[in-house]
Length: 126
Image (cartoon, rainbow, N blue to C red):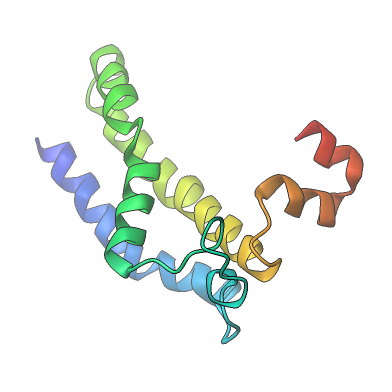
């Protein structure tokens, strides 16, 4: 239980500290989001904040209970640290940067953004 509490504290602290560092590296700007600028009612729809939070939570935490339980059964409490540091330094940063890149490219999908920045060959591989 102590490892769970430590990891929870690490996640909360990193949200307020490391989150500001990441936000400073690639901060949101004042432009309208594609949901507002292109609003077509199908692919680009303005959602209330609570729905956005719920969608993001479900995308991040969707497989967490399944794989976290399996890893915990195999390797014990050390998995809490792996999940925590993986979330802080990889998962959250990837989600934030891919969202910002998509927003700055008119809501393009990740494969379209890769095609823009890395070329058509990488887009095909993606």
